[in-house]
Image 1 (cartoon, rainbow, N blue to C red):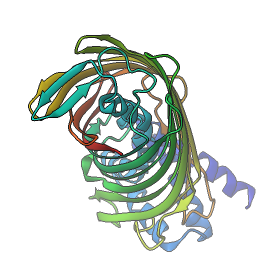
Image 2: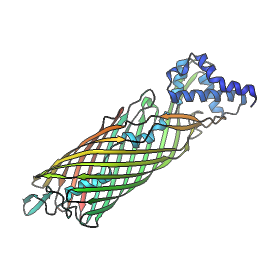
Image 3: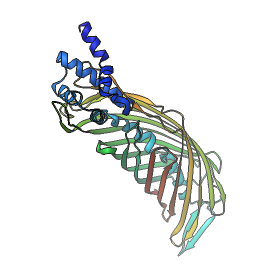
Length: 430
């Protein structure tokens, strides 16, 4: 490149900003990064002709004679802030969800039916609910099968720096475990989930499918003190569409852009959860304080949007790596009631969570049609360090080793995030 061209190109953002009266004043950092890169690409493409024709045409419309408010709107529309959603779903909107091992341990307690102290007899059938401490021989029958199905919904509010979205999620988890000793159970579980997200401002959406396998175990150190652990690994398929809509009313190429940039990618994630709890019992009342450590690492593969979508604004996104480390301190309280068909156990639970990692980060992207191949930074906000979950459930311990339950769980105290989960499930012991 000739020296005078390089000077023009590297200084053109300042020229454009001065001409527009400070276009970026109403843009956040990510949108400003897109503005600067787009202006440089536009100027370079005008002189070299090396940009894709679609991108150059799109930038001619946005920058050649448009007014400030319309340029702002166009940069907001194309700035790819949607790329924050994949990591956010796992570490924010679904933060604090009950882990596989916590659900299994609760069902194991409810299903215990040896040496129980709360008994109800009717028509020669005996129902039981452990109240005097789950003795080490009371952690269930030798083999157990279980299944849970959950529905979650919620939203992340838009802020000046981040694009929000609404979401809903369906998941199904099934597993089986085996009692190795009187105090130790190990098991395997498989989880499938589907998440739909719709971005605020009609800016597109995502579909995510995840498949996760887990190995878990519960061990009673004493009659009341238990340790639980779960290790999980899985993959994810992501589809994303970015809705791009803006109107330019001035300039030689004035018009309306209404298009969608489409892309898809894969990813995987690995997680570990360690939990310790102590059961206090008095007659039918049970109180269980607990503490846990949860670690998650996930990778989202690099991907390119379809170059035939987006009217020139299609992009390439670099690989993203995300880590989360949280501790949880909480308690569960329940009471067992004998009824004609078994034992009913309502329960309340609440927990405080603290996030140590998952810091604010920067995703990297490039416009496919940009001959300069500039890297554009997309800023992704960090988490709330402290948040809470609360919930309630009710379980029924029936005959023939069957336990059923329904639960509700809510995320509270997380800034700009709202999330609710309903779960139904059963456990069968043989």
